[in-house]
Length: 390
Image (tube, rainbow, N blue to C red; front, side, top):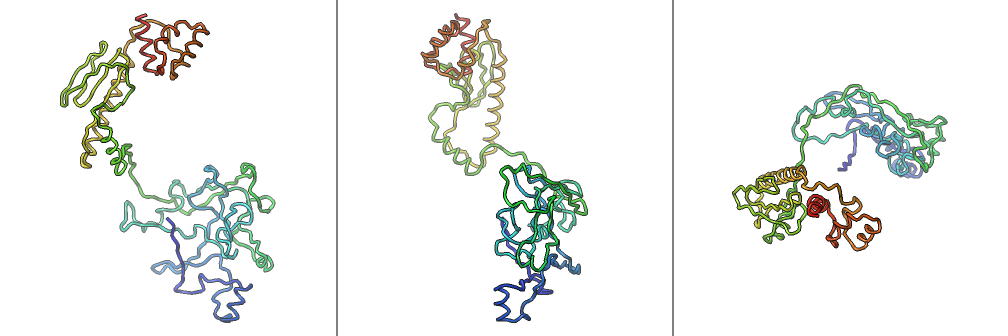
């Protein structure tokens, strides 16, 4: 969000007007309109602002910091930290003769850094009144009246315009953090070579902020993303179960009728399943759980119901997997699939390497799985059941 604002004074037109009394622009205006029509030729480094309801005029002072919300720019890989408080190009900031404005600015048109802060308000007060003097102050997020800021060492805001130098005009708001008063002209090869200084801003009082309730985000898709997911789901409806875990080889499947509960004994362990689901049990530890898809669109009014059902299925699946992991392995063999084999395909060269290494047990148990990728589940099955059969 970018907001442009033009300030004008109904009290004194010269409040926000300035023309440098030198150069072609001034000469052209003077020749055509004469000096009486030029509102102001004296730079004002603290312009006035008129307070509503009889408050009168108050002076605006720019702050020497980059911004209220930039106390430690260096922690986020950003440079600088102080406001140059002079007009001119900011493109090389914070190095060189950088200003805080545009290349066409006079240097003496001093930016009022954070001198005016806009609040974008709603049509009504929220938790606190906008009339409060402390709400939204620059220190509101820190819980203290004073806030420590940091900046890279440099001489910020020094006037270098030849006309200003000839006139002996100095910037009353320049900030010098150097020991020798010289400007760091070029960006260093390593910014860590530039020292960082700390300084404190006293906001006069402790700021306050609106209270808010923390929100727990729902990770499930919503809106257009949810609709696209549902469309993709309908395309996949082919009477086959949707895969949740690893697919076993030659599984024994137990479909559960809709609305019923079935207890299945899988190598001595009973598991309960509700309708519209399907289980597969092979070898006790080689296990998968699947959810049958519904081949019809889910109305938006049922989104909450669908999310709840999905959550219950996920929780049930996690419990089942945990129970299986805790089950006793029938084999008493100490042999295990080598760790460097898991995740790889059992190839002729891999078996040859095992033979050359003299790993006869691995060669014996893995030879029959040639051409198959060794997953963690398959490895556990071989360790627990093939070793027993052998």
